[in-house]
Image (cartoon, rainbow, N blue to C red; front, top):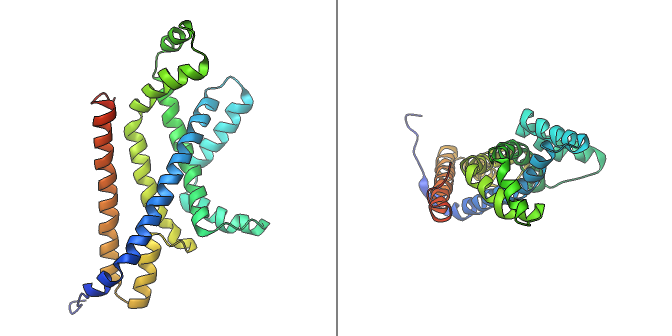
Length: 223
């Protein structure tokens, strides 16, 4: 190792492929987060529902997502479903696992956000003639998202980093491309140093963008 010579030119020549992998990482993370948010809202409402059916359905999803490893769920989607004739691509295996986990974790975050809003606000909005849908859309959800904005950002960063597990099922995201390139060039250290730097930059840009959005949209009113 003392005589190791870095050959950065090999990495620079392959940089477009690393960028392609990074794009896949961002793509699967963004889509899984967006769908996860939609499902999480429904799960949170189900967890607060008086209906035992909705409560139990939501609770099973949440408890499963929060107590199983991400890798296990990816393997279940990729290998487990394949045993029953349902063959998902590496991308959709990772995507479905991230959606499942994001929804489970965010559901509890959303439930806390919902419950932090005084019930008097719901009653006041109803007294103004709003139906339940309008109350949630114009009164409850804006306040709830303001209160859970930072945990949502953290969950998105988690999704970006956990998407690297796609390497284990052959997904060509950033880690997968890095592994493929280093295995053919034998420049392991160079490729993984650059990939680590790219992950760092991506997550830092997400946090920076999150801060700018918060200042623009919420004007410093975050809880």
